[in-house]
Length: 215
Ligand code: Z5A
Image (cartoon, rainbow, N blue to C red; front, top):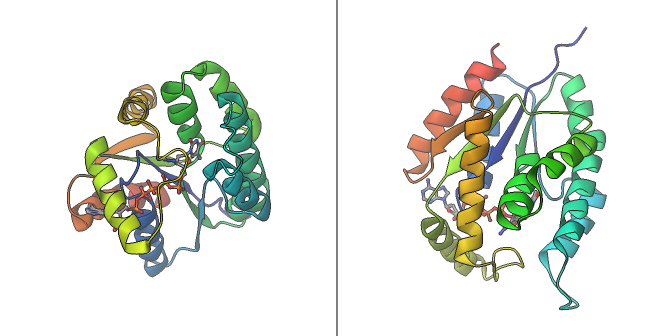
């Protein structure tokens, strides 16, 4: 019987380095001989990528109710788990996901003000009770994250999306919410100081990930 793969998620506020470190971690795990896939939320499946476009751009300018956001993010997640993540884990493949259920709790719960316990219950339905073996929370001052994003967006010639345009206070609540979740599940959610240079951050992530993939 195949040994189930490990499921590692990266979380954190804007510009904290989730995509960068998901890529680096996947490369390190592959170099160490592990089979690895990466995924991102929202997205990662044709259904998820279509919903991502709806979520990121307010094309009609009509805004979006918080509850609509919750169900759209959950819909992407339900599809990603069943189509990509669970089959890969069953085949013994490690899955690294750039954002997962904690994002909905932090953004739509703590920051938008929807009931956190209700979101957690809905998350269990969307994920089929799949919980990451390890969640790396890249913690970074909100203004520092915005500055990194600004530089990245300038170099790519793209503009802020709908949620990135939320107020500083909104993003401060996201960060505080994540830290609260880390206090609630300290075994699973490990906080990494993302204000340091990439190599220092990656070294911490690698140490945490190694522990999980080797047990
Ligand atoms: N959202 C939600 O509300 N509810 C949910 O349930 C889910 C998501 C799943 C998804 O946006 C949006 O959806 C997000 C949350 C919301 N909204 N916002 N706002 P996305 O997928 O487009 O992007 P993101 O997930 O928010 O990622 P990001 O903030 O754009 O960036 P990041 O992945 O954390 O950072 P990065 O791209 O790796 O790095 C940013 C720049 O910093 C880049 O130029 C790097 O080279 C640089 N970088 C990275 N690390 C370092 C260090 N250590 N030092 C210096 N510079 C660095």
